[in-house]
Length: 253
Image 1 (cartoon, rainbow, N blue to C red):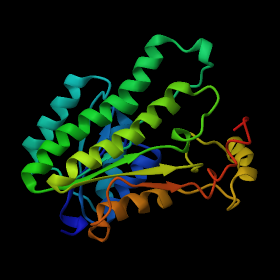
Image 2: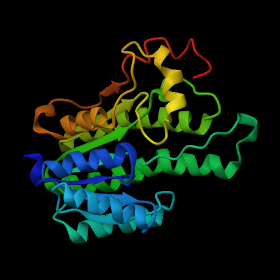
Image 3: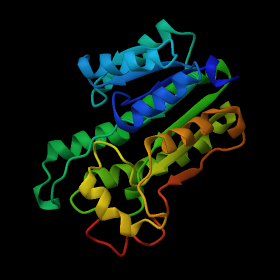
Image 4: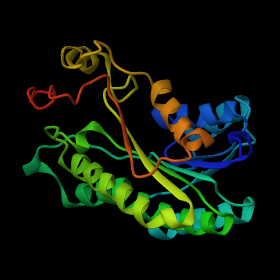
């Protein structure tokens, strides 16, 4: 089935990499479900942008830290569409704090959004995909699933857990023709990676530049396409070589 016929949910698709992924699928005429944590101007603007790119897009606000809200979101998806072909678990929460300063509620929220929500979204999506004969789940990780980053312990730990969730799901869902893979970006030019941090990272990136959102989105698109029909349980690192030992030798990164 070509991408233009697929229904695709991209969590956290109001900005950054998530919005670029949604726009990439929209250009292929997929039916994109644009998600944000609340029904606000940012969600409406993203939805309008995705529609303008060529998608018969819908938007659904949902607080991913609220399990009941996640279940309601999937009930709405099932009601409004014929099913779900692709789930992209992209939404993320990160907050800078030293280990001794991390508040319990911040820890809980990071684990809820970054790990529990992908688990629950994937479980609910898989149930829908099984009824359709298969599907794709693509998780968006981080190079910090492999290398610690100072002051971001909950983020790094939750991304490390997401990596094993990807592999566990791939192993168990293969019999249902559901492929599960992960895209792990490195330093990507977004509003979360400002010019100062980008400049700091350049010396640690063998390719000598930060990546683009489109380079990440293109990998996600490939994994959703028929060309990736024999790939599951794999991790695709899009980092310009950042994780080739450079991160470990630069504790200031």
